[in-house]
Length: 354
Image (cartoon, rainbow, N blue to C red; front, side, top):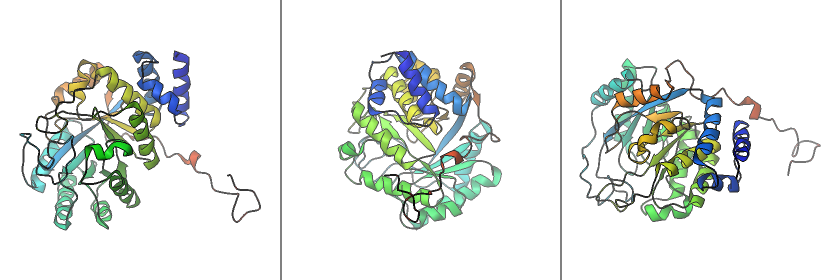
């Protein structure tokens, strides 16, 4: 297949049109040369985000001892991984960690806690934590990730000042039961919809390297696009010893870059975030990934250590990118051109568009 076909795919993405299934599968295969794929995805990235890179950081509010059995997770039920295990840190400690990251350039702080979902006391803790963080950093975006949400919880988080709610779909619906038995794909979709309805910015992505096929990747991209997220974290499996997926080292830098490019084509004007596992799977190819992703995590992850922040900032500068400032708008301007008031069908004399 030719570079001209990739140019066509990039043109479609710039028009916010989705790839066909055949085009998506070709990107993941070796039908196109890798550098041609990256170049086409980079053109889409530049169109909507220029040379900016948004920095995000994670504050792990509560670590380990989760009752869910997600096979990729070091905090899962029955995990033998020797990760940190602790109950809730205080709002003051969370604010201290967040303040350090904000000073280092982070624009979004993600508050994450292990567990199936929050109870009333957990929501109160997060409310207090948001207040503590935004007292010194009123401009920072606070994203919350607490698992499955119940009635009214998303509304409380929004009222407390949360900007976004994060809940990844992780893998395709068809194989979700292969990686988790304690909740379903539909449970995750329901939580994202609750968050969106409450006015929280929806954040949802995936983890790759868990044995998924090319078709699974495309199915997941389509499912995520249907949810219309504002940000899409792309994680690459960190194979922890003591977890069911601890021996999976399937990914290569080539595979990771093709996945990132595909997600840029599916989410041309959405914040595509380079997330967990980038250091161990992309390795020296991380700077090339910045030509596809416009956002990345700074510092450590939930239970694994990330690349030192000073090295990340140097990598961004060396690759010719700029850290996005507080005054910069991350997402492109509102897409009013896509809003068309119905003037046909029921209630009119014109035929429906069916």
